[in-house]
Image (cartoon, rainbow, N blue to C red; front, side, top):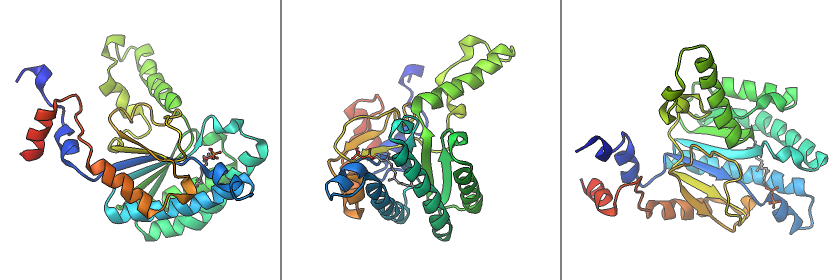
Length: 258
Ligand code: FPP
């Protein structure tokens, strides 16, 4: 087999698995869920926290290794100030309340994004929840907060640029493999399944690099209504996908049958 025909390491494993190792979710539709009930938007976010709890539990039970949730994007600061303030309060209250429960359930919490922009109280809660759960070996729950996929790639590029400027690296040495270790989720498996609730079909500056080979699942269901059964639908849909990673269908069938 020539160099160009080699199957990259890990690809055959990703082709064979019917359960995703890593699920990444854009939890959209909280505002519409609340508005449909004549409630203020923040009540939708509160109901969204309940849905988070259900999905975390189900993923942990099913043996999913990583769950990444987009809780607040770099662009969400543009929302009305009251909504932003109430979201920050909700994050603070939720982390305070849920950290122990996560710990009891052997979940490791990690937050990615530019957390320095968050209120100091939220930063402190994040730090203590991460510290409390750091040694847990069950599900890794990643919360993307003030996160943007373009920011992630740019900060990784900045690391390499610094090395180039120091004369440690030539521009020609910059490859995807050299950039990858500087990305936020560098030490975790890439997402296999991406889910977006709320009917829109876009990635909205989420994990732009890491979603390269994810299967994309879109549902009309609004996030607060995304219960265990909805997750089962998504997992079932995923198990029926033929993932190819650039190979032919025949090659994939050979790997699956081996
Ligand atoms: C998008 O729905 C949702 C958000 C920007 C916030 C998501 C946050 C939560 C579900 C709380 C989770 C908390 C933790 C700690 C993980 P939207 O407001 O854009 O809904 P719309 O499209 O109907 O307006």
